Length: 71
Image (cartoon, rainbow, N blue to C red; front, top):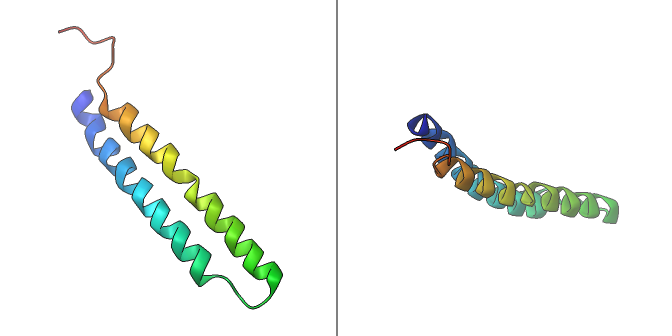
């Protein structure tokens, strides 16, 4: 069971870093010309950046063995 979760843990780990990179890219590349468009890009970049801690927490949790397994 634990070996089945390792690829998912690794995926979540890389998605955490991808979220950080995507957040920065969204913030800089989708700014637009008007103040409203820039504000939207900033809020959306922050929103995507908030996914990173979730992915890292999932990765950590999936990487730890369950306490219910017998040796």
